[in-house]
Image (cartoon, rainbow, N blue to C red):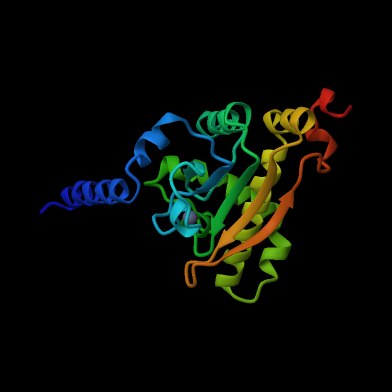
Amino acid sequence: MQPYEKLLLENKAWAQEKKLKEPDYFERLAADQRPEFLWIGCSDSRVPADIIINAEPGVIFAHRNIANQVIATDFNCLSVIQYAVDVLKVGHVIVCGHYNCGGVRAALERQKPELTLVNKWLMHIKDVYRLHREEIESQPTEKQKADRLVELNVIEQVRNLSHMSIIQNAWKHDQRPTLHGWVYALHDGVLKQLIVLPPGSEIDVIYQQDDAQT
Ligand SMILES: [Zn+2]
């Protein structure tokens, strides 16, 4: 059997099992989605959002990219955020990074000539490193340096979210969403909270939208 054929078989078994437990399961899900959470995570195959928080389909609206970045010129991520915040009206946005992140570790190294696109994507993490170089370099081991950059990257991405007009408008008019930064440990499967920004949190003045100040 080809590996992809196993996926299709597993899907059939899963759908049958769900239907057996709850006959109208798919009809109910198909009718509408009202997720409470937007999840922005890493593409890493070991950090599947729904599984690590034991969530059923319908709970998490998700966007994943290399090293869970929120970049102001990334229309893909921005479209997901706009739809989640303005249409689905999620109450929470979670940025979730993970220790031993290949993207973050690569950002600490020289650029790889064969990975021209990935290099550009990782530039933003290099910027986070440069912003916090002293703190990161004060860590005793290479692993701890990379782990601290993982944490700081999550915190910076949460701040990036707060700089966006989509978030500032929702904070002003709807008192949501709360922004969260979490980090996941691959070795024990446990999440740790790093930062939480409730609606109306202080934002550096240069990122404030003019009419969001009132
Ligand atoms: Zn990763």
